[in-house]
Length: 129
Image 1 (cartoon, helix red, strand yellow):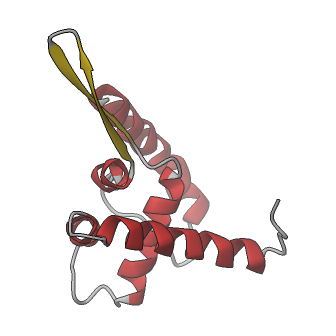
Image 2: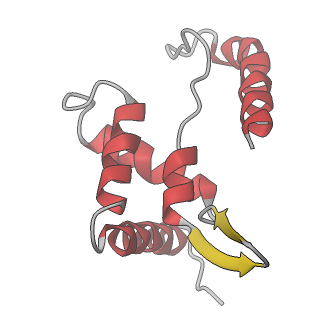
Image 3: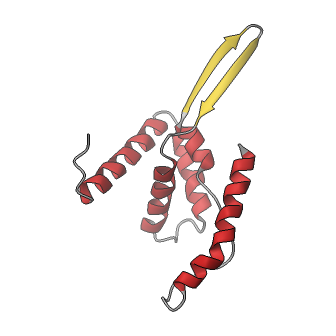
């Protein structure tokens, strides 16, 4: 829903002055405004169902249920690439989305996210269910 996206971006931008104060004298800084990303990729990784209802065909899309993991993997890929190949994290998302749209790309990216989450859980000492 676009209104959630806009409200989410506004909430992040409204919080930036406080974050800048927290970062004062740390050598870290945040310039500009927030740029949200990951929504298109999250939707592409999710499921699509098509149902016929009376005389209409209804297509329902559900985003990948772990949106934080999508943002994390996009960020991790961007940082590991040294930010040199693709100037913008949004470009990284677009490239991953292109992979998702090719053949077995969706399953491949889902497995990568699953592996990443397993590695994080292991590092944190979580034994799983």
